[in-house]
Image (cartoon, rainbow, N blue to C red):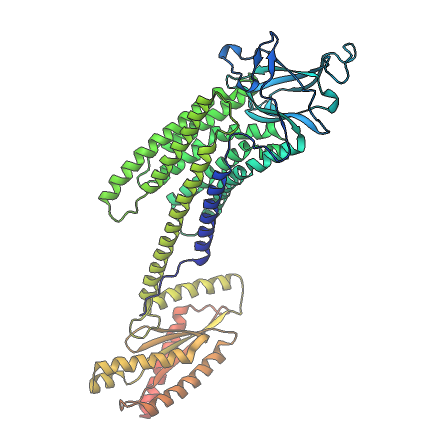
Length: 587
């Protein structure tokens, strides 16, 4: 029997290749567009980082101001005089990034103002920003892009910022006077590739979930592993997308995005732990369960602490980071355990390349943590390395998933090949007795269901066939010719029945056929006429000296009666033996 050539699932291969190519493209393009600050757009802006002074008249660079733990919740005031030579038009504003601070803005006329009247244009409060995050994230909602509108009449006025830090990394960055729309466009243009990279990570997560759901035959551990990987990737992509500032600018929902980001930060350790655990051929018994319990406790503590005590979530983030450290240590441990296991069990597919990719991912994550710790918060992007690391991680896993998919398809093909060979007669290529017994069970179930549902129109014919003169051929001209005799008879039966039914070789010279159709009795009569005709044509060319003929009988099996398939087979056999007896008498 010809072995079927392995042909992979073309759609799956194309999907994986396109996804890998897209991820690589995003990785390269986002790398060239990375930057910690917003790039200047074509239209000019006025840099306001310098020229500020405090109440004592000391000159300060407001973007370099830092805070100590004792400064938390205290108020610091910094002043800036809007230049008189500033050519300002409508829609101009003070544009900047803030992190971990509340602030109020006051405007006051000076002698250089266009409109100076100390009584009418004294110090006026006109803008404030207070971190709240809907009560779910405590006092700190992280990085936020700010736009404080000013007008052409404010030229020469003194603007005052009252800043209250909520954390020691509180800061103002990249402050400028610029047209509002140009500022927003500049952010979007600079950060869109960060957003696309983050979206790619989330899309990979969704694709992993769908791939796992719609792929049949996945092992239980592998299915859990892919579900965990998909969940983790989706959450990380959402987190990185929210940090890109694009969603904040387009939606204006900073508080909601912050709540979501904090919950994601607390929870990502859980699916990552499950993925690490189930990816190994020898998973740890309690690792993923322990991390899941700790994660639930963290989320409950965050909600209680933020709502009841208005506590900053930063106090809980170190615990979440410790979970990731624990995940990192467990990944290293399971990697070495996997290597030793695969050395002892050569037939087990190694998974340590996955752990190598995980360890690389952890290194990228901890690099960003160190960058954040050393920067005093004075940056608008602390996830650059993590974003690149996740894209590389996705590329590695996509290649691994493609390899696994091809290997699974190859195994499925081999299993189907073995099953087909087990159900096929090696000499004739017809179905064998094992296949006929299997079909009996299937038809019995269909008959039972039809009778239970009172369906009376389900019927088929069972045909019993015996090849005449086989012993004569074997005895007179040898068993080799006898084998040819059987093959020729099988071909005649197969071509006569064709698509109207199925033919089985159930013994040396014994065959069974099942005839289906709207009118199986009529189909049977047509098959018999065709079989006689083909046998006559064969015998005219036959050089063996022994004619080829069949003894046959049939019986109808219907859902309208109560006879079993086995009873119907006996009736068909009885008719076949009667036919054989008549043929012998005629000779």
